[in-house]
Amino acid sequence: MDGPRLRAAARSVRDGGLIAYPTEAVYGLGCDPLDERAVRRLLALKRRSIYKGLILIAADFDQLEPFLQPLTVSERERLAATWPGPHTWVIPARTSTPRWLRGRHDTLAVRVTAHPLAAALCRVCGHPLVSTSANLSGRPSARTALAVRRQLGRALDYLLAGPTGGAAKPTEIRDLRSGRSFRGG
Image (cartoon, rainbow, N blue to C red):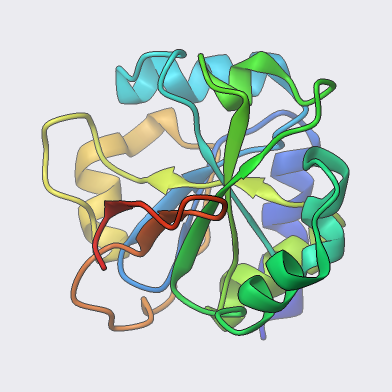
């Protein structure tokens, strides 16, 4: 991993910036999940409703745990069988988890990413990142740094360029408690 670029991206996140970075299938658009101003800026850029909720990606489960209700042993085992990997799970959120992340839900969508650059970025930041596709609503998801620049241009504070993980479609999203699939699967 490129240390100087990761540190620059993390510094941008720490300073309230919006960054783009490669994930398993497409480029992600992210920020510090606890920085309400940055999250609202991201939502405005994407033209995405705050009521929909967002996904958090992390380097490991420990980074996500403060946002989530305690899990049973079997729930932890189910997660461990799919992570790190291209599986996003919707899990009951702690009441302290900000509404700007949960939207109108009492759950939060989370993933321990398998993408080495995205995971390294989360480790350097020391916390999870908001992760939504780096494109304007209704436009195709960006799979290259150039496509990100064309759609989001100067609205970004930092672009961490690198190859995506090569997945053909965005990650599956599944409810941990019911097993219901929201996307993919």
